[in-house]
Amino acid sequence: MILLKNFRELKEWRSKASGSVGFVPTMGALHAGHQALLQRAKQSSQQCILSIFVNPKQFGPQEDFNHYPRTLEADIDIATQEGVNALFLPSPEEMYPGGYSTYVSEREFTQGLCGSFRPGHFEGVTTIVLKLFNLVNPSSAFFGLKDIQQYFVLSKMVLDLNLDIELIGVPTVREKDGLALSSRNRYLSSKERTLAPRLYQHLIACKKNPSLIPAASRELTLLGFDVQYFEKRSFDLGEKGTFHILAIAAYLGQTRLIDNISLDSPIF
Ligand code: AMP
Image 1 (cartoon, rainbow, N blue to C red):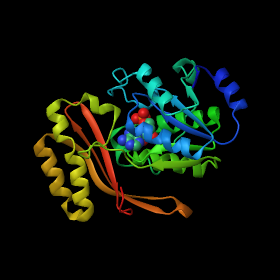
Image 2 (image 1 turned 90 degrees about the vertical axis):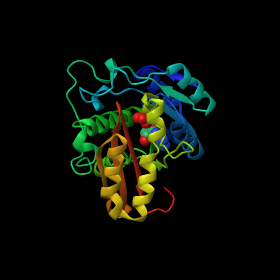
Image 3 (image 1 turned 180 degrees about the vertical axis):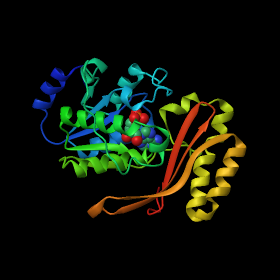
Image 4 (image 1 turned 60 degrees about the vertical axis):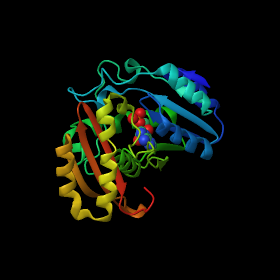
């Protein structure tokens, strides 16, 4: 695996990479969820490139940017194990030099859900992902369905801006007890960790019977969750179809957890 620490090294690698290039953008602190994306990228592409960049522009002023886990050595081991061909590690200075002033914003799918509670978050995401797409020039890019609103916002950006990149959504990887893997799970205390799977249990129950949503929210609140939203939502991607989901976000102590379940697919 080659480490690419700046745009020049990336350009040189990209100019020599032959065949299809599968791209997995992340913020590092890699876990089995990220590994599933890398495995999908390896399966369907001749070259697999991973990026790790903790993007300051997608964190609000009160959020955990400074404390976000940074575990580069372990990440390099995981990426090597997964057979990643190139690891792109851009610096914040090169990504956002002084005077940086251009942003990408999607105006429809970013409304509601996390968009209501994390102002500016999705603009930070679409901006960095478009920049990474322009730099890496991948054939396809792989995103987790755990971050379902992000997946649809990015799919809409690809559609609206006529990007010639195939976006592939990878099902959420979970712990045995159902908790969706997340780099932020390490913030949970042991008591919180035992409560956290309740989110997914309620999603499953409410998928069967959506009239249970208000009671499920109340029960989570009684358990100590600070529920931000628990609701049904649809995303219309034109010819690709309309997708219906049930999504939840809740704080448990200091940790913000999100999860969702598809109302269309029996699988996830
Ligand atoms: P992050 O490093 O948290 O920005 O995530 C990078 C990518 O990994 C995003 O596309 C996430 O949706 C995806 N991801 C994070 N957790 C999971 C998970 N449990 N299962 C599948 N994909 C995930």
